[in-house]
Length: 285
Ligand SMILES: [Zn+2]
Image 1 (cartoon, helix red, strand yellow):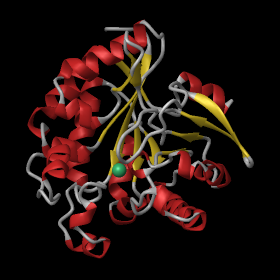
Image 2 (spheres, rainbow, N blue to C red; image 1 turned 180 degrees about the vertical axis):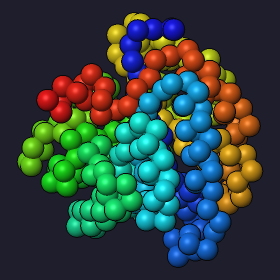
Image 3 (spheres, helix red, strand yellow; image 1 turned 180 degrees about the horizontal axis):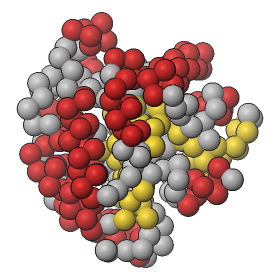
């Protein structure tokens, strides 16, 4: 075992046609016409975690919960934590507060109907809680959430809050506190902050990039990292719907090696779910 620190493993459960990079190619009205792959893809992830004896947090889309309730029950039966990944995978900063509340409550209802769990942990589509949409945290508190993991403390063309506190901490909102668990970043010797938590980095870059980042975070900063990936990232046979060279590259490169990289990560580092992490347990009292 590489380190005694328990990192946080999270899986964003959505179909291959939900990612923000794919959405320009597929109207939401077409979603229900496309073949579903999420159940088979998530089963692969559940098997990998089962073999490694690792529990994680699965942030499930309400849209998936409505259509694949048995999948949520399988995730729950395997001992994992169920969180919410919105209902219809819209960027939070493109929604009004009223629309965000409506989307969140619809997802909470769908997840509850599917498996009886009222989710308390939230992850926004594409980390879209940014400086422009911080109002969303107050609405999450009002919708019953105790934890959020939607902020990436980096600058990126589509998301991120540069300079945001990099480790788990409480944020006060007018409706009460919420624990924010940012996605893992690492401070490099030159002071720069580099992203390490995302499925994309694990998939696109050599394994050692993510591994060295987690090791540095655990050993030098003495902090747990929050890592995520998507079941579709382990499915090289999915229809490739994203159009445009950059969207294709970001979405589909490296899928063949992803399964082995996830296996290696699970064997070399300690992981657990978000809500039951040390910070989470303290927050939950
Ligand atoms: Zn997503």
